[in-house]
Length: 155
Image (cartoon, rainbow, N blue to C red; front, side, top):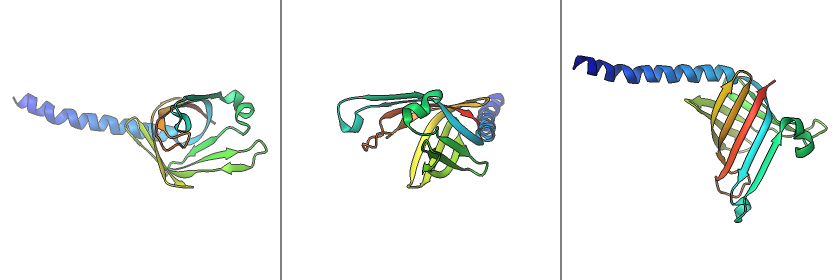
């Protein structure tokens, strides 16, 4: 009976400690600047129609397909981030910024510039690569139904 109580108390504490430790490791690993190596987006009910649209681009083809420089996202140790978008001439065209945090296996990004939007992505970091996947409103049709996948490499 005492062993059961002991285990009931210890298991949640150990689980919490392990998850916190993993989140701290991931938080340290994510700090730096990242660039997209592969992006795949499936937009269901594209622009509120009954059609689905897919977008897929690899980093090596980014400038040709996207007609812009590859996006560079920088995560700072203080929990701030920005995501630099530039045209082919190198001029900044969009630079959303805000805060980030990790809770277990989820990266939560809170845009504060230009407007307040929260994104939640499952993620996995392996050495100098990070993968994100989640659902968002990529086509801006008011429905959070677009499947997002991105693999990025650390610069």
